[in-house]
Length: 377
Image (cartoon, rainbow, N blue to C red; front, side, top):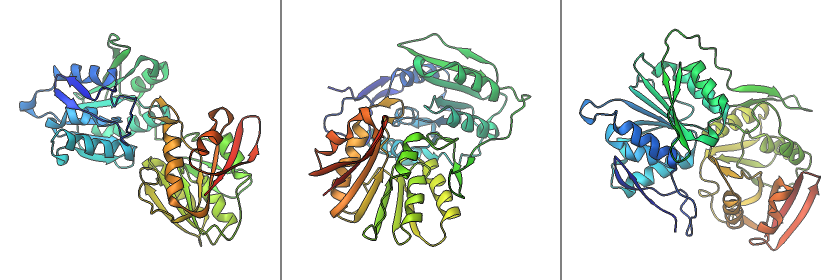
């Protein structure tokens, strides 16, 4: 059975993953979270009320454990924020003791402690470190935590470049901490994010914020999807699910100008990118943009078409659970005769998973690497 009780110096806490699954096999925190909390317990003094900023907390383990310090918490994940609120409630802690910020708008305060859980995307880390300059003082203690396998040399170099000299901790349970000494005299370059690139075979300039997959160019899977997008008047209400920078929905709208598009992603940066790209390129089509938990907020039998390139990782955890949840939700949200179009690597076997939910599953196109599948009610 998956452990849900986290025992740390700050207390014995219940921490759950979100969305909550009946037979959850994955724990909501890791050894890096425990190591960081153990380490800061010796440094934080509640009486002096040090100011604390937490970045990239996975499911709220850090925020809940340090809630007594009324921390600011920055995340690019809607799901992380939802999990933080739920776990605060679960531990009978006032939700308002933690100030939640999405990745697009950081707090402007100075902080005594900045605690960073190493993100999967180096570009996101770089963007955060550059934008954190206003939050630093000469005495700010910056600590980056992660599992050793996720703390590449690039992470160390980036922290040293944008903060100051780094010192590693010893490894404990395959986790490590990186301490950074703030150097106020270092030269910090202009933030290169968001990145813009021309979308091939179009007149569009595509905006990608830092935490977007393949943020400097069009990835191969999306390129294959774009080449086979459907076109028909029957598609009136359409979702770009897990929209990323919104390129799939954007090109679909260009082919189907009477359709109303709904862009949804759990990444705040993804939704912001999609909204900018759509509004710059399309002037007549109607669209909505929402950071959310997949299709949770959509009414049953309300959509004609769902376009989806499912993510196969959540934070640093790889698996097919997110795709399965998207498929199950799509079944409920699609009208009778509605269609789900899914692109994925061949080895992921989405056609098998889709048959658990849809009676009509067919391959639309495939090559040596990708397969595009249509599933219908």
